[in-house]
Each structure stands twice: as structure tokens, then as C-alpha cells.
Amino acid sequence: MRSLATKLTLAFLLVGLTGAVLVAAIVQRRTRLAFTEFILNREQQILVNNLVRFYQVNGSWEGLPGNLPSLLNALPRLSTGERDDEHDWAGLTLVGPDKVIVFSVLPDRVGETVSNSALERGAALEMDGEVIGWLLVTQNAREVIPNSAEYIFLSTVNRASLTSALVAALLALTLGSLLALTLTRSLRELKDATVEIARGRFGKQVKVRSKDELGELAVSFNQMSLDLEYATQARRQMTADIAHDLRSPLSVLSGYAEALSDGKLTGTPEIYDILHQEAKHLSRLVEDLRLLSLVDAGELPLLLQAISPQALLERTVIRHAVTASQHEVTLRMEIEPGMPEVKVDVERISQVLDNLILNAFRYTPCGGEVTLAGNQAAGKIRLQIRDNGSGITPEDLPHIFDRFYRGDKARRESGESGLGLAIAKSIVEAHGGQISVESEPGKGAVFTITL
Image 1 (cartoon, rainbow, N blue to C red):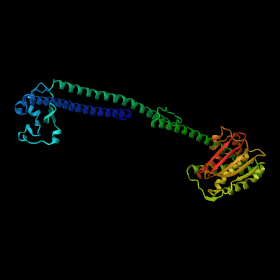
Image 2 (image 1 turned 45 degrees about the vertical axis):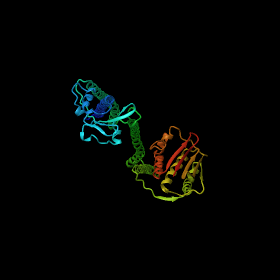
Image 3 (image 1 turned 180 degrees about the vertical axis):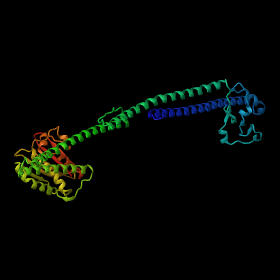
Image 4 (image 1 turned 180 degrees about the horizontal axis):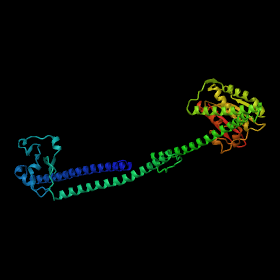
């Protein structure tokens, strides 16, 4: 039995059938007991009436033992057979008005006085508003004989209970089958989709049919499938970008080396400088890739030390003052006084600031302004690099920290690898911080590091 739908259907059937059978058995038993109790109570009341009439006729209980069989035979019968009065009324006791037993099937008890608590369990015999005695009985259950009215009634109740049990079982089977098919349909779709993903066909989506746990599973699966598709496309794009970035400097190095080897070119300081620059570009790209691999593996080494945000920003301003002058850009610093120290890897955070400030220089026109700011908000330190340059388009903004993403496609030929912001994000997050960007085209950009 490998089908989950079959297992669920049989489970529902078993539960439904068990419940129906138990209910039917309980109903039958309770009906039989209630019916028997009704008959016995009816017989007892008739016997009480017969005893009262006997007392009215005789004026006392004398002569009762001899007349008792005729009083019992006057009771209605449960069957067409003969009544076994000795068996049916084995515990009959008659108590007089003075609470003394005047008759009992156990002759030794005649003359005994009965307690009030025992009389409360019996039936009081009254005539003209006066108690003339009490009837204490212990009746045995009757055996119902076939073809009697009572037998037909109980048989009808039994058949109705059995029919109800069968209908309940069929209903449980039908509803169980429908529910099992509904549950397993979503599971089958998920299974087929996972097979597709296992074959490399990412992006497969399944229909969300409910809002329960299966529906949440389908939503999670669809998101996972889309993420896998995006990750696969990003990996392919990254592989192509890496190949391109490596091929360009290698082509230059290979071309110059071959020309120098064949004697077609004579070595000059200019040629050696070109070779040196391309080698440095290769080395920088390899180092960036190594750094990202360390971040992905959670093994980026950090040498944490306490430093004030002001000192951190001052170091950056000093390092880039000359570059700002060359770009004809004003470099300013705004720092909130009294800011507490932060524990960071100074070199790594400086690497992030360097990357952000060089980007700001690149997109800020002559006469523009780049500001390094530091402030404290909600118990956290915020470092900001603001510029009034060209800004970032809404299409590029969500992808600005993606690896090898270049909003300006011309940067591919300018030696930029597209890893700078991805590395900056990884370093900040390795410190437990966050980096974000806000920008509007033509109004510059604001990068915020929160530590």
C-alpha cells in the first residue's frame, strides 16, 4: 500500500466505521434497557393499583398470599408465553401502614419492621389520601419472545441502528476519499515540481489551492523555485562576467608578451607600465573573488579594535583629499560630537569607505560636493557618504549591491569589476551591520552604513 490517498481513505473509513458501530451498539443497549425499565415500571404501577383495590375490598391485607397469583396474572405480558411469576417477582415485599412486613417471598421476614430509608425506595400504597402500605420489589429483566410486539419494536430499533451505521460508514468512505484526493493532489503537484527542479528546470510553479499548511508549503516552494532560478541565472551571469573580466587583461598581457617574444615590439617603459597595470588589475580581481568566497564561507577574518567614528572618517578624508582635488570636487566632513567608539576591523571598514567615496567621485561632476557624515540614532552609529552627482536610476537601485552588476554598462570597459559594492555589503554585514542606499536621478545618492 504505497498510495497516500488509499491510506488516508482507509483511515477515514476505519474511524467512521468504528464510531458508527460503537454508537449503534450503545443506542441498542440503551434502548433495550429503557424499554425494559418502562415495561417493568408499568407492571409495578398496575400491581400497586391491584393491591389498593384488594385492600378496598377486604379492608385489610389478610388473605393476600392466597390472592397474589391472581393479581400477578392480571399483569400484561411481554410475550405470548406463560409468566414465570416466581422468577419475575423474586423480590416482592408488602409492608403495612405500621411499617411491619405483612408479606414477603421470604417468609422469615414477615413481622420485621422496615426502615424509612428502605421505604423511600418502594412504592407507597394510598387510599383516600392515607398510606395503607408500601410495595418493595426487585424485578428481573424479561426475556422477549419472538413475534411479540415488544420483539418487533426492538428489532426495528436494531435495524435502524445498523442501517445508520452502514450509512455513516459509506459517508465516511465518500468524504474520506474526497478529502484524501484533495490533500494528495497538492502533494502530487509538489512532487512532480520537485522532479522538474531535480532535472535542472528551475522556476517551476505549483498552484496554491488552500490557505492551510499545504498552501503555505506551496507558497514556500514557489518562492524557493524562483530563488533557485534567479540564483542559477546570477551564477551563469557571474561566470560570464568573470570570464570576460579575466579575458580582457589576459588578452593584453598575452598580446604584448607574444609581440615582445617575436621581436615585433621593443620593450619600452610605456609597454612595461601597461603590462604592470594589467597584472595589477588581474591581481585585484582575483583578490576580490577570494574575499567574496571567504565571506560566503563565513571565514572572513576580522581584527576588531575600538575607534571613534570621527577618527575613522578623518582617516578617509585625509586619504582622498588629493583625489577630490583632482576631480575638482569639494570633500566635506560632518560629525556629531560625543559619539561613542565602535569596535570594527579598521582596514576592512576603511576599504568600504574608500569604495563608496571613489564611486561618489566618479559620478559627481566638477564643482560638486561629497560629504562624509557621522551621527548616532536609536543607539546605533550611522556613517554616511552623500554626493550631489547624477544619482541612481530606479531600475538599477534594487540591484546596486549585486555582484558584477553595472548600472553604467560603459564601466565594463573602464576596468571596474562590478564587485566593489557587493564586497562593501559583505564586509558591513560581517560586522553585524547594514548598508543601504537612497537616490534619485539627478539628485545624487546617500549610502548609509549602520553599525
